[in-house]
Length: 254
Image (cartoon, rainbow, N blue to C red; front, top):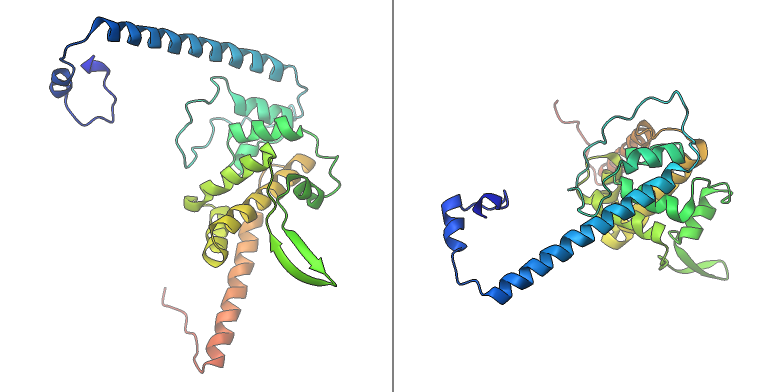
């Protein structure tokens, strides 16, 4: 049994072997045997469910182009693989059915893409614009206006599974090195974590709507241009503030 120890255990084999020595009562061994049998039975049922789900996914019409380049192995994410992920290649199925690889978007994994597909489908034409899409997901702010004056603005609560999946994806942006991660941290520093999660989830929804509508691959250079414009606006603001205070900004030496 010491040979089967987890790789994260720092104790050596001899120490583990000594810790396994004890008075094992027969009823405890029997209970352990029953638990192991139950575990293996449930694992078999889960495998059968995966096979059934994959058979249904195979029946969906392919929207990917026949000459589309192979996506190859899935890019490593900033998270550990979940134990409940299916054994089959869910990413390839989602790419084929949706016509675009949503896992190229930072924070979106194959499981999140499958949740979006199960809730929305592969066709977003039912939503005329991305604003309609955000409103259906309830990721847009709920503004209370009276007499043309904004009284309050806060996020909308939602039990939508797609919106929940996007919020969970937005939470992973805290340590993400992409431009979306930079956007999340900028909003978090200014308005706090909950608002940053909602804002990033809304931005992910806009990206997904655009990808599903145009069937174009995710292109991060668009966000790079927006980020560069944000830096220019920030620099102008700092220069104006420095000028008002009687100072002058000098670029740092490279």
